[in-house]
Amino acid sequence: MKPQLADLEQISSAERHSGSELSLSGVSHSYGDLSTLAGLDLQVEAGGVVGLVGPSGCGKSTLLELICGLRDPSGGTIAIEGSADADDRLARCAFMPQRDLLLPWYSAIDNAALALRHQGIRREPARAAARDLFERFGLGGFETARPAELSGGMRQRVAFLRTLIAGKPVLALDEPFAALDAITRAEMQEWLAAALRSDPRTVVLVTHDVEEALYLCDRVAVLSARPGRIVAEYSAPLRRTEKRDVAVTDAEFTATREKALWSLREGSR
Image (cartoon, rainbow, N blue to C red):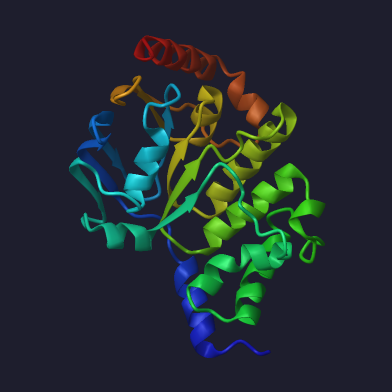
């Protein structure tokens, strides 16, 4: 089927995003009597990449849900391009959870195109938009493969492509590589760095891996134990360089990593 002009204009508009300013001021959240976040202030410029690290249960994943408008904060404000409305935030954010959540009965191309299908774009134009990116994302030749036929790293690439092709200016990534082995994880970090260099977005990345955060992000915020508070921030040296091994063995990088790890240990007490 030949793509209709309206379909192509919709896809083109989505692909033009390069990020939106994100602002958190005095953000807190509670589940009943359980306080999970307290007094968070964070500014992320358009196109900036910020990492969140902290102990388990400190509210990192909850914070992503708040940013995306999936929950409302108990206190404080979260605004994207000045709008604190939850529906506006949801419209501007794409959320990638830890599990890839690919539909097993869909091919890789149809899983990747799902975000566009949800925007009302018809199947063939949505597939065409995804197909154009498959080679660049290292997925060429696997368009018709089912998720069970893909490696863990390839599944994550499909999931990230689905997140990116949605065209949202803000990406919320919740430990996207946590389930991968060490070698595949390092390869995927390098791959994601390249993807963010070529397709900039405003990104908030949750991870338990300080090294991963310092490599992929511009800044890293360290959260305390519950209720989560930002106890330290670090600027990342040599971020998103083409060769990960060069970055993570650099003297300034390793020194910053040790400082961040110290802050993480102190904040966990």
